[in-house]
Image (cartoon, rainbow, N blue to C red):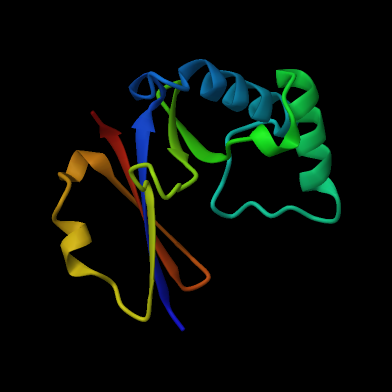
Length: 129
């Protein structure tokens, strides 16, 4: 079944409340894996658990306190797409079996990037203020 995903990335500076956390998270992730997250990335075996343990040690937090995100880098600046929470604005949407046409019209062309991978269309929205 085909799927379509809309991911909205915001500048790191947009996140006032957790700005320091996201800065530390993205810096650590890049040092640990050698670059930003990728929609094509996969965790094998115990890699994810090892990453989480190292992140907790680096940030001096418990595993239950980890907040996850995807992030990309544009012109040496991080843009993040945090994990969706029920009480927060969603930054990622997934629908099956249709491509919502209105997703293509709600942002201007300079804000959009597209990626096609294994039958999934991912629309990245960046530079949203």
